[in-house]
Image (cartoon, rainbow, N blue to C red; front, side, top):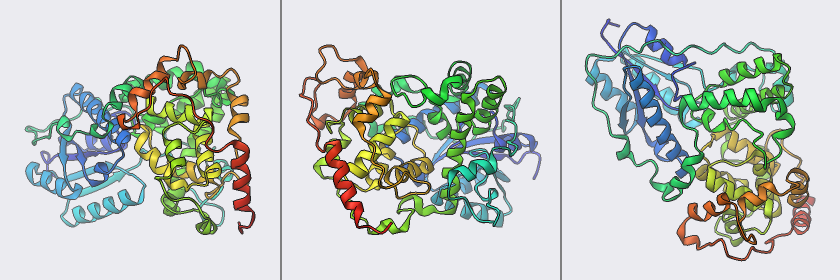
Length: 473
């Protein structure tokens, strides 16, 4: 590699400058660095909310690079073709990127690496999206883990690399290649009017992610073990939004939590376990990619799920009009904030897959369209866990009762009161925002009567258990 041949730094779901192995290596190579983001078919097919949020993240990364005297070059098209064009235009002799782990990205990246290396281009991939590469964690017999607790025990004492510092400078080329205008990509088009509603709830970019982590470690992590289950409290880190796009690294979260644990903040251990739960999801996606689109437990393939997404019960669930307050509040939270409390995710998923006997894939795909913190591995594993068809899943015969769950985790109805406007003389402003966020053709208004349950908890439990009774699980 000549002293002037640039390195193309291909950003993907790693929208930060600190603790970035690929960027650090590019800056240390001694050549100019050209940061690139490619809007390829895998980006194009993202759901409405994830694509919109990614667009915001790209814009924030571009500003961070400009503060360093660099730029983010934007191109649209097939990733390999775009990289080949940029190599021809700039004389680049290397392409660096951070690894992704979903099957489509692995297939794409493998072909790109092979093709570039055949052309004598230094093509290198680096870790950073995970703390433990999925192929490095093995059982004593050399297999992969299928249950979380042994996985946690295997990694909890393994050293996690210390976060890397932000490069002090990013060497710039003498001239820059053409870049698309981010606005021309219209990454928020499918969000329509929902974008204006969700935007105030977004904490955008690396600096905001670091501030969020710092605030949680200072004020929230000590009580995390208990408070994380109370949806009416701000008891979680809310970092899933930033982790999903790599605006913060899991290494940074791990080491901050270890420091909190050393300071005597007991809830930090629970937070560490949640970080490892995310790793476990990626471990399973790597070893059993069927978790993304098929029942992980193959014996569930014969289960008679409802697979009609147009069914009235399914639409009531999507609209937050099931008549079950916990379910409806959680769905409405998602439309207003782009996220959903984890306890709410468990309840809405259980209600759809068990009370309504609807295939988990329908719910998973709806979340893919609606969540700004969408993550392919965590989303799939969460849905299959709730349905009972996944690894380390809740037992199929365990059917959450959304009414008793509400009494246990929202005793004062703070959560339901924040998100459901009907029957209220003075609804919470966030409950009213729901009606501004949803599609106009749903035709819903705050003064509509609140519906009776489409399926009551007792009826849903009975028909779920009846459906399970004669199945050979």
